Amino acid sequence: SDVALVKPIDSTTSYLCGLTNDEALSIWIKNVASQSINAGEVINVWYQLNNNTPVAESLTLSSPLNAGDSIQYTFNQHVDLSALTTYLFRYWIRYAPDYNTSNDSVLHTVVHYVLTVNISGGDTVCVDPIFLPYTLTLQGSPYPYDSYHWSNETGTLTGSNSMFDAPAFGWYYVTVTNGSCTATDSIFVCNQVGVPPVSYQNIMVYPTPATVQLNVVASSLPQGNYTINLTTVDGRTITTLSYANISEIKTVIPTAHLPQGVYFLTISNNEHSWKFKVIR
Image (cartoon, rainbow, N blue to C red; front, side):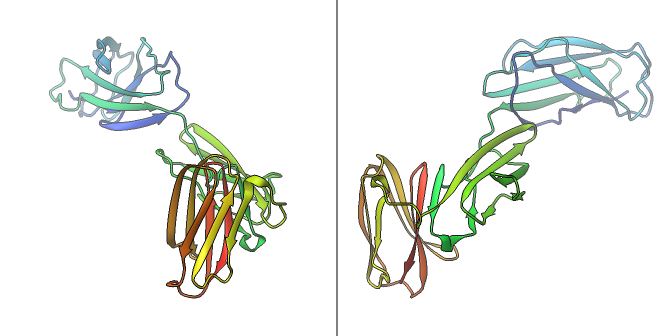
């Protein structure tokens, strides 16, 4: 006889959310020999969570386990997986007539986490109408996404890719999934030209064309960390400047060495971003 522990798959990791303090554990055992195993036979099963004391139980076959068939066993003793952390499980089985014990144990990692998603630009991004449609992108995530669902406020515009072209000003939403986990974020795309200047958005980018240098002056900003990015129209970064814990910016970006053409300057913090068209 030869029985094998086939699920969970050895040395794999499961990323799960919404776990509780009363989770059931299941394994799948397969008869990989050419002969059936009779009903009434007993297979001993164990699991160990992290370095805790192993839990021992037994599976008594209620019917023959034919060659190539599998059976699921759910442990009677449940586990507490409510903490957001990583859990290491070891499962193993023993069946007296089993002549091959190399397939009788597995290691499986469970990561209990909260799925998050963040649209680049913060809660609001103000752009000139010339940038419409404005491409919305997502910040990097430590966990992969299985699916994307973008929509505008009325749900009349939707998308299913990692990026979304917002054709007009307004609210946009994205919902992502990873397995059974979901996360949602939103952003308001506003008209930079149509918004009256207010003190915390007192940003000046001049001159245009900027044949020698580009002056960037901002005052009365909310205290925080800011980044200035000057890019080409195809997204290639020319200059990146970072500022920590400031409320005003006054800087000069040399432009004499740049080829003539159109560039984009973006000023952003954790919540907002402002984008300007620059002519060289």
